[in-house]
Image (cartoon, rainbow, N blue to C red; front, side, top):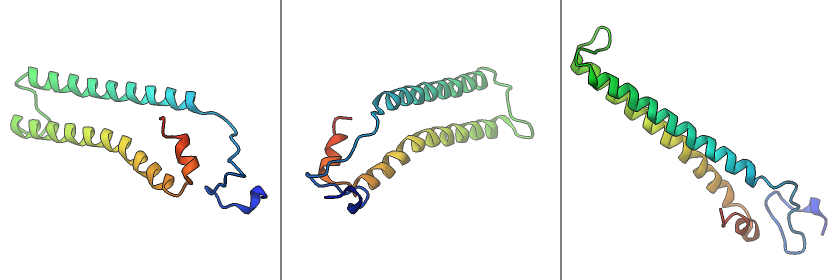
Length: 112
């Protein structure tokens, strides 16, 4: 069977997909960088929280201490939600795209 007759993502046992490159090392490096970036952001967030909570007279301009703590807590929640969703959304998209793949193509990624 001619390779051009197949739709994207559709393979037959007689015509397996041609592997052009192996990107496992790049994927591993990018995952390590993402984890390092997440750790750095969490440490920065914890450092700001520590400084804010250590000095009782600290507050944001035009707000009192109570409202400043609420704003900092909201920013913390938004930052953690953003970090979590930035890792979760691509995974959901990849699963949705992978649902159209043949069983042979899915087995290639089961070990990851």
